[in-house]
Image 1 (cartoon, helix red, strand yellow):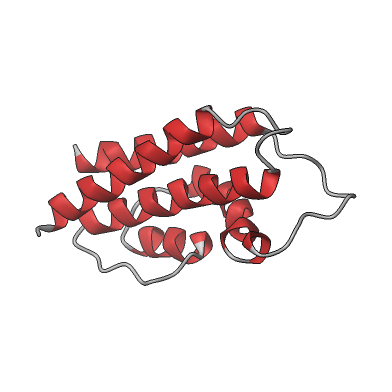
Image 2: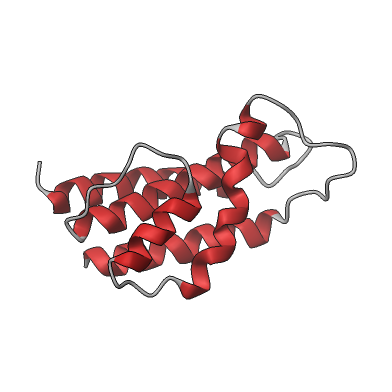
Length: 127
């Protein structure tokens, strides 16, 4: 499989996750931990697709900060995307535990907008 084909496959998975997120707006049905996990996954897949289309090998990691650093090292402008690293705790830590009662609920609309932004940037790189 070529780098481009791999990138397109990863982006397709991210788009599938984004569609699911749009259907998960009801916090009474879908816990923040579940919603956040899927948002993190969509961002991770998008960043890996972007790296892939650049011909870069991406590591087997869930760390969005590391993936953004790799894109930055490749000369890509990711300055406006660093905030998505805030989804890192949802990758592993909160997958097997819960948010505390003191944690602020996720802004689901804002999260979807951030996933859309990362996915668009990755898609633009592939195009």
